[in-house]
Length: 213
Ligand code: PRT
Ligand code: ZN
Image (cartoon, rainbow, N blue to C red):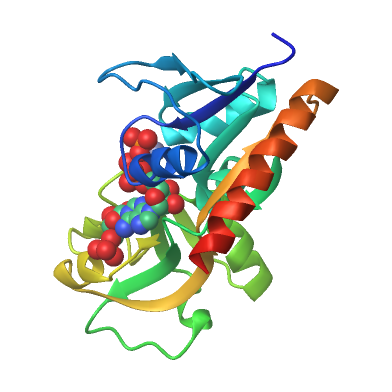
């Protein structure tokens, strides 16, 4: 299995469609029959694994997958030993702090002593440490935006795209702490044959991206 690239992509979610589109634009053909967890390319030595996005960095670190496509937010938060080899330009979003709309806010120091609900404790913790602010991080895995209105936390730190989720939960965005897009991550100990295949793939991705600009 030395001369095949195993590429992990999100099974179903906001990254899936654009990830598969990019692969197709690179001229790589495969059959992604509904519900399949693994499929082989028919005209390139690659296999695709369809996984939850949160699991992809760990698989790439372990070498179960050689490459993966994930949001940079997930790549950084999971803190796995992988290399980011390319920025892909889709699934752009930001990780932001939001507070209840009626609350006065003059700057990040207003968060001192407050509790902030998030699924991104590492990124938030780093941001607060850099800002010299001591706040309580309340880790929750989903429906983060509801936390302030039900009294679970004073603020949230979550992914924002259009801003409509914040708005509909009575929140306002007060700090952007991280800007993200989809990235390609790679295992750190590829064989020379796999590295050669990765170079070929990156060459094709660059050509696809150049044609769009
Ligand atoms: O099932 P699996 O674990 O694989 O997927 P998931 O549900 O964890 O992730 P998914 O598919 O929601 O998102 C995958 C990646 O897409 C994220 O890691 C981000 O890099 C990127 N992305 C881009 C987004 C958004 N835009 C986005 N809007 N991820 C999440 N959101 C959510 C956000 O959490 C919030 O609830 O959408 C809401 C905010 O959207 P707006 O438009 O109302 O601001
Ligand atoms: Zn996920």
